[in-house]
Image (cartoon, rainbow, N blue to C red; front, side, top):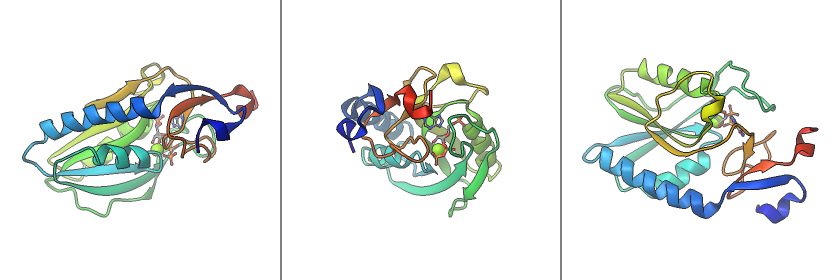
Length: 184
Ligand SMILES: O=P(O)(O)OC[C@H]1O[C@H](OP(=O)(O)OP(=O)(O)O)[C@H](O)[C@@H]1O
Ligand code: HPA
Ligand SMILES: [Mg+2]
């Protein structure tokens, strides 16, 4: 899918495929350097983080393993409900592991602050976060994030894994939607 398939639904492109790729390359190099000599467990947060996981991990050279957790706090709307549900738990035991959570976006911070606490309670050696996007002005709770791709304004964004009512996840870029899509 690309911008031409969106008709009038796209308002603007915030980050191009190229900008995202360049930034992921930089993040992968930082992570490789920080964890040199260690084996890292990447924990992707389904479903939004699928693209970031695929494109970040392919730029890394460390020995890594991947696991996935599915949590949901948004339902089909554009506001976090604040209630985080585990839809799928990890397959791996975290005891003694270096864990890096891979996310698409930190918006209110509610999902990640809950998830970090949850994973830390399982006895890992470390838990850090890598997220492609962060909305500093929308934060309801502070989350300590080690790797951030881009800080963005507090607008609802889609693409590169991010959905609106399950649509637009397969856009290769990150963009905003025209108001009529929301009924606005
Ligand atoms: O910082 P927050 O306000 O908590 O929002 C961030 C979370 O919300 C979205 O996931 P969602 O729960 O919509 O599920 P999805 O990944 O399946 O789209 C997004 O992928 C993050 O996981
Ligand atoms: O801006 C967003 N877009 C899509 N999904 C999201 N989940 C949290 N914030 C967002
Ligand atoms: Mg998500």
